[in-house]
Length: 101
Image 1 (cartoon, rainbow, N blue to C red):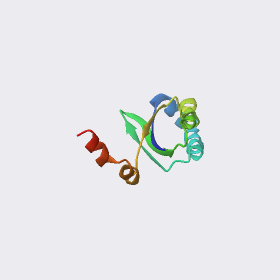
Image 2 (image 1 turned 120 degrees about the vertical axis):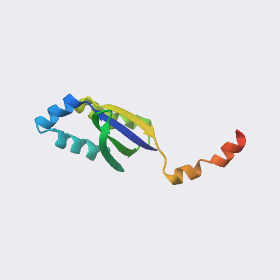
Image 3 (image 1 turned 45 degrees about the vertical axis):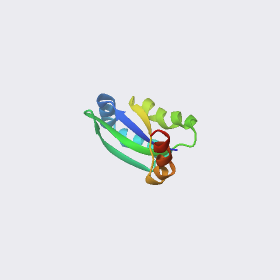
Image 4 (image 1 turned 90 degrees about the vertical axis):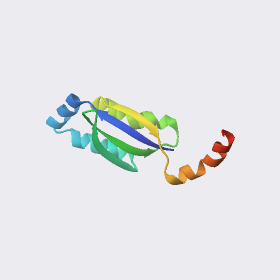
């Protein structure tokens, strides 16, 4: 199942990683391990962060994906289920609408 991981990096902790030179290497290792479909980095509420699209076969994979962000950057991580247009077409919206009309 496809999820969007919303990662928010605390300013001070990430600043420390930038100053000591570990930020890029650590993020590279995490992303290599996460194997995202896509990754977009931006700011959220004045903090650094990103939206990372991952496929998860089983919810037991969530700690493997989230813990590196927690452990290395004290990040906040949220998992948001997401669909591509093909998934939405399979959802049966017309039948659901008829049932609840």
